[in-house]
Image (tube, rainbow, N blue to C red; front, top):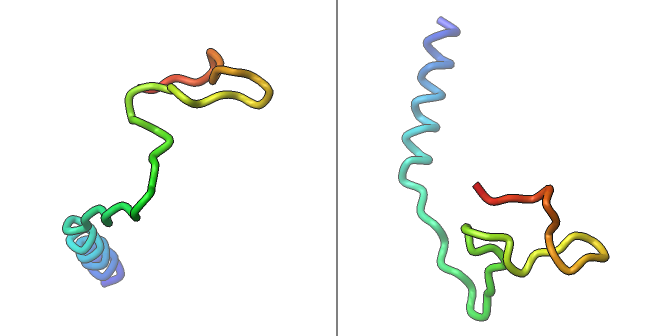
Length: 56
């Protein structure tokens, strides 16, 4: 019985989140990450992000 309830709850949550849409960006919003590089990022006290950071 518990297994059926848990399975049902998981399915309900998956269905609800499958219709989620990205909210429109606020006017004047500027993204700090382009999703492809670390351009514009830097480590504390440095001018670049450093070799420890990478985008995959």
